[in-house]
Image (cartoon, rainbow, N blue to C red):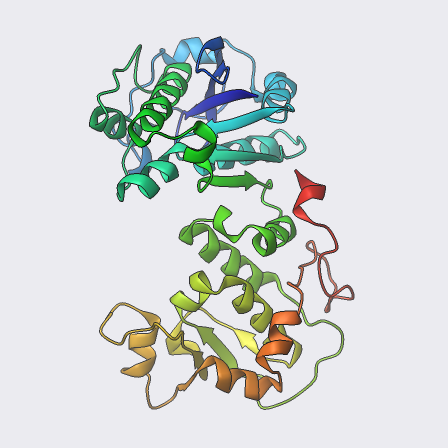
Length: 348
């Protein structure tokens, strides 16, 4: 087994100008270290956005500009990320995966589908807090060899941090990262939904929220609408329902849409509000608080059992329903195939 630690730097918080990696063996012995510089063909703006403010890249802009674009390195990067007998590891890796998705779309390349592990998530799981790469390394007395925000140096620092965590926790790298697995599906919602069924822990709360919102925006009725009390009514789910019971939430959204209902994300816009068992009215910025207070005269709050009753479903029937799928952008007004027919093993 080999381990590929990688990192990406961007010119503006979205467009890649560096892809760096360290390839090592099971004993953390470096096999290869490389930085790929590329011309992002976008303006360099390192201080204008919240998520990259203060970043100083390791090379002058002119150095990036004289290199080829992402398109020239696509096959090399894809081969690295999709190699067999190898674990792909990063720090805040879903961000880097998203940068790859942006580049693939802009250069009209097929999305790179790969499984990965996130040292930042592993750090949070073990130490109970989220930290930057620099601060996590400092907390474990891991020295930086090279320059921060130089992609291969950051990849090396991630490797050294992972090694230090293994020593501190007396665990193998596989044990360390077991709860920090995820995958990149190139923005394909149906593949994300298939993964959700088999590996819900692959997704962060933010990713689950995005998945639910995208599904709600794109879902169509499965066949002809079966009208009932939910017809033409707006339904909103609590945030906790969306992130704590995401599979059920998406299945229920589909059933509501099948009955002519509409899914909204604001409690102020709904007729029915579906609460989670753990919702607390004391959390004043929550949808549940608004539904319970400001909107109490116009919004009917439903428990899961009450919603199931409106849908004429039992909890056993809910559990047996497959996760639905969405169609690509098309003029179709309904879904003829009710659910995805592939599994995670067919994808990555």
